[in-house]
Image (tube, rainbow, N blue to C red):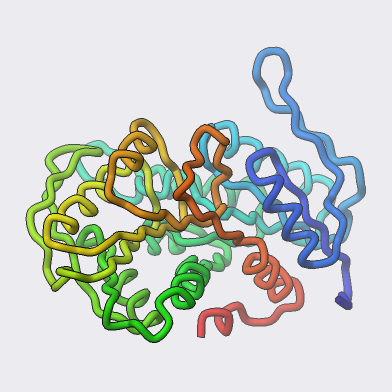
Length: 318
């Protein structure tokens, strides 16, 4: 791979070191030398062990749990590179935390996604590269360019091989009304029909399935969502689908947050297989035998190469 102009460097904070290493391998580059540590009082300490002057720097860091620590690591690393005269700094965030707090749902609510966007910009980032924002309009919260990658091409390519020519036996299902557009595009990629689970949410993290719009009887179902947090929506949808006579259920999502009772709910659910991307690292205790985890590094590596060489990212989604 022949670079031109200033050099390119890939750095990782603590959240996505494995993904960062895979991105570097895809690009044929060594990892940037840095170290993130903490002082005795819990403050974050960062050291850069190589010059970044005039370099095009990409910092790989998901703001997943522990969200606040990972966000601060990202901000501090951006600040360090800015003060070290990096030519351009791109925050590569496979998972963008606080993305669900994107509006005032009730009086006196904060809009935390906008605050995070301001913090990243003020710290000195010149660009953000992320994947499947929970609310795509968050791109507009930034006053710097945002490249928004999609996980659907990776997931749909994997499942399309399994579906093959048997598209009539499969149906893609959206677990709620908010995911209909995502599920419709997913169904178009695979070539199967679409169904929708209509639910009514009683309170935060608790939902009640009301109705299924579409035919799932005697079908193999592919449940599509952007993230799985407590897994309440996904598992309730799966149970309702099985009650309507579906043969089997494969679920897929980009971000495996898997907080609280998520693992227990998935274990007890009728979901045969759960296909996830590795935007959030999963500890061994959160990995079940029916999990299939696909890598995002090749997609991010291609996007980084395009950004560095000032080529458009949009052809990646044709």
